[in-house]
Amino acid sequence: MLQVNFLPWRIEKQQKRVKRFVLLVLCYLACAVSGLGLAAYSVNTQQHALAETLAAVTEFNLQQVKQLAEIKRYQKELARQVGYQQEILRIKTSVSSLGQVFTYFEKTLTPSIGFKRIDIVGSRLNIEGQGRGYLSVVDFYRQTESMPLVQNVQLGKITASTADADL
Image 1 (cartoon, one colour):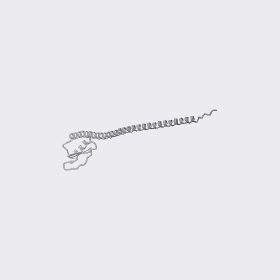
Image 2 (spheres, rainbow, N blue to C red; image 1 turned 120 degrees about the vertical axis):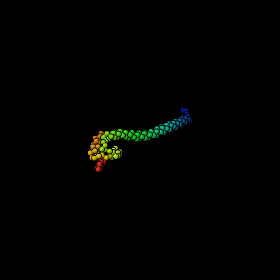
Image 3 (spheres, helix red, strand yellow; image 1 turned 135 degrees about the vertical axis):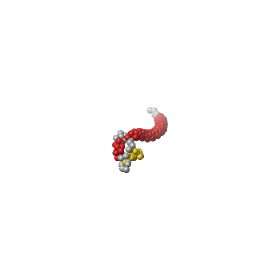
Image 4 (cartoon, helix red, strand yellow; image 1 turned 45 degrees about the vertical axis):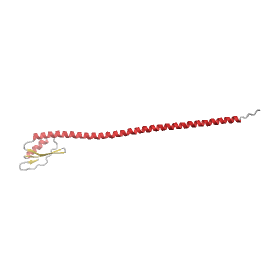
């Protein structure tokens, strides 16, 4: 029988397999490195895009906070102006009412009653005057008490003199 030496052929076949294996390992390694590089690049790109988005959102939020602060300032100013308008309206109403009160006083005054001083303290009207006798003072008191715009009429002090009584 012929003896054939398959050993060199086996060695060549084994060397080819080893080369092929090394080549495949190198290809896999190159693919893995490329894949990792692409993944790192993708993550870096996304991180950069997210950082830009975060900066834009932060800037937008700062603008919104500034606008809110400005709106609050406007609201405070508006509330202050509304308060002023209400105060002006109250004063106009008071002046109108006061005008009506003085018109009524003008109609009800008699020669026996005279005013010395009129003061307005807050919402209170103080009148100091003189009357000829208690009856003229009491009559003026009753007429004032019946006025529709006057409330809580109080007679302060009455002192008698020889001819006049003080309110």
